[in-house]
Length: 405
Ligand code: SAH
Ligand code: TYD
Ligand code: ZN
Image (cartoon, rainbow, N blue to C red; front, side, top):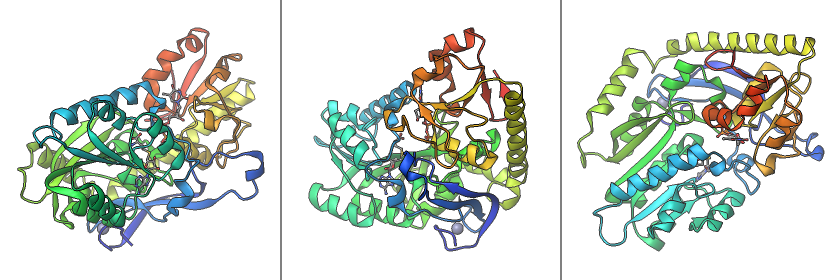
């Protein structure tokens, strides 16, 4: 049943049994590894694309949650620019003491800039480990899930918020009705709710099927966000396409009737309508492309293994769990994955059990090929690892199609 409107969700792809994408395993964890069915569908009543099955939130977001937002220089810059933009827009001209709440602040990658600027702020972050990192960055954090009761507490303790912001977090939250009711309780009458998440249009255009994993519950479009906002007395008043994580949209949402929507909102919604993005049929080519990529990637990796080539992975991303497990890729095809996140080192990748090693392992010695699982950071990583390419190493990418660089 649709988590927005209660309508029927029509499944369009089933990845089968999948592990938790951010559950990196120690040797003792292998017996009780958790699996669920990863399948995705669309509700044609409200146009929301969503997972068919939901994983309990405490299994995913806990003290050992390993994803650190500050791991990419490019993303640090993106969030610093975002914070500075808010200083000039939503947080300016709102009295002497504007207040911003961020849902899913992670290690404080965005709020640290506002904290330094002396802006009153609060991050709401259920994953204790990354919340502590945010505190070390001078950010005020409530270790909690944002939802309606949390919002009621915050407004009682600190008053209304001028801006509520979330990046790559609202799409993680199946109980989106409670989020909107919480925003309604916490947001000042003329405040704004701004969030950015991977855009379904870009996912289909680039066949980035690995954006589909346990944590990504919703795949937003302007129209589906309009549908959920409208149910709670809000409307989308601006949209902006962002070049991060393979293509995202930033939605600006206010109470209905408080602001005139920009032309960009209707333009993107019209484009979505024209390409049938709210219907099952829109996914037919996508499903065929996913199967083709699986076939080509597995064929390539088996061929390289047969030739005795050394192949590793780069970036132990959540996305890579979908790729390795759906394609049946294990240590026999990719000997290890290197990643800069200390919490992932010495662990095994979920489901595939490929070992994770530090970034320096790439050069020890350089392999013949590296599968770029962190393709969304391609520019940054390829620049950092130029010596690998100069030494004759080649990158394997699998989106938008399998190719070697
Ligand atoms: N904003 C960061 C982090 C994205 S990862 C960035 O863009 O890089 C998603 C984060 O959402 C995780 O840190 C997770 O712990 C957090 N999260 C999940 N459910 C949440 C909820 N209900 N309220 C607040 N944060 C939540
Ligand atoms: P990312 O693609 O941002 O997200 P997700 O896990 O949600 O798919 O993850 C990037 C991963 O790649 C993260 O584990 C850190 C790692 N990484 C490196 O090891 N080196 C780098 O230079 C960068 C940018 C990322
Ligand atoms: Zn629906």
